[in-house]
Length: 131
Image (cartoon, rainbow, N blue to C red; front, side, top):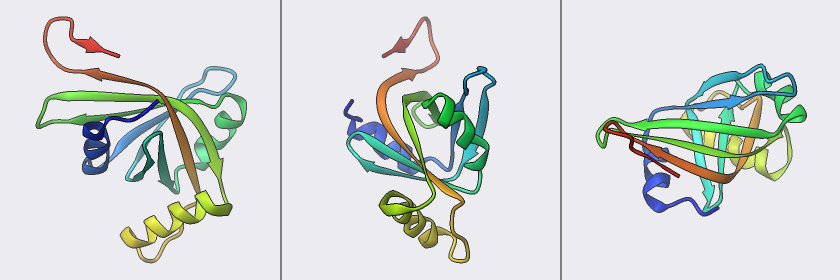
């Protein structure tokens, strides 16, 4: 699925997003992610030290969600996708280099690549929910 330009801009602008996994036992894990990047029109990267919490879940069930909010527009966004965990290779290096521009003395534990399969937009008001 192609990520609309408006959603890419907001994803890059917000301070953090919430990343959720479930695993085979459906025990949901949600973590706040500060370092994130739009990789291309269909993929985002989540970068950081939190990722070990989600690695096992991604191996068991790689369907994930990312939620974020734009308080100025009073809209919430949810990205659904397929997550892949990287601890080396070109995707990891892309995330590592991005993190080093933000936090010069740290390398990420891992990088999660999310291929977007669906997007939901939510905002206050009577029955407003769009997929």
